[in-house]
Length: 192
Image 1 (spheres, rainbow, N blue to C red):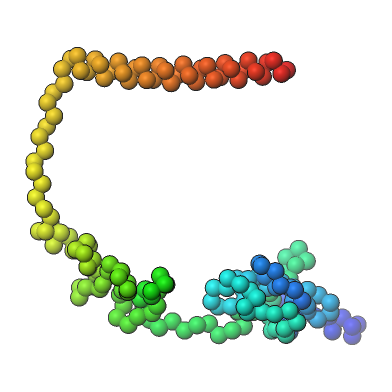
Image 2: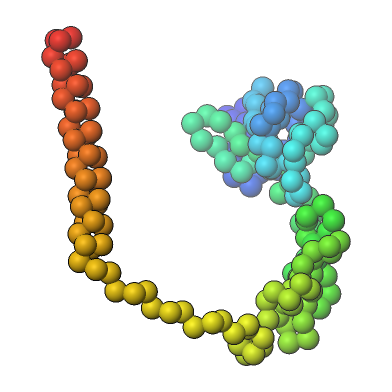
């Protein structure tokens, strides 16, 4: 009876200590107490994006893990869920040189280093090359187009020629499809 009390409790949310047994491109296998093994998927290693798991973990490293699932005898673990979550600073971002966004005071996105957008006083964006503008400004600044002249009505001969071309194109397409179908049927009959 006492032996049953010492059996490790593997419930979702349990926090355990283990040792990294092996590392793959998709995750790390962790040796747990009582000769059990669980896996930390690469997405559960850190709160930031992990492209190479070996930059975060090494074989033989002692780790604290949380059980996040037990399905079909597999033990799914997480390291990042035991780490404090990164704090958000108002949820405002600013694009960095490498294309990523960084947080920014003021509430608007701003592209840096040759980007096109900068925040406007009214909260929208203004393209430095004269792109986006509020609707009322766009109407005023739109170049006036020359009126389009309606096409001259087509003669009966032109209409007939257009219809004949359309008919010939459609007929050629249908005949080609029928020939392919007949060829395929003929080949399948010869094999059978």
